[in-house]
Image (spheres, one colour):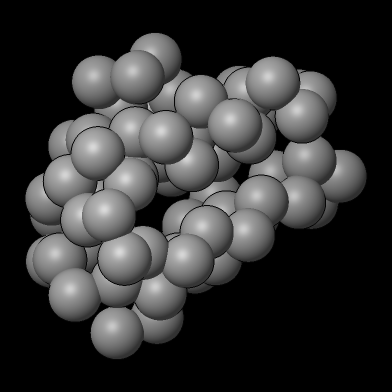
Length: 64
């Protein structure tokens, strides 16, 4: 499943790496693309959207 989530607090590549690591901690096969300009994160994952949102939020980046 492909998710596209808006993460307003993502400001730099380090933020994007933290988000990527948070998603891959719950789904090691997930593909994550983060665009710091648009604040959009595109994720290919087998996990549910609620699980992904929770993982990103627990890393300190609430999802809109």
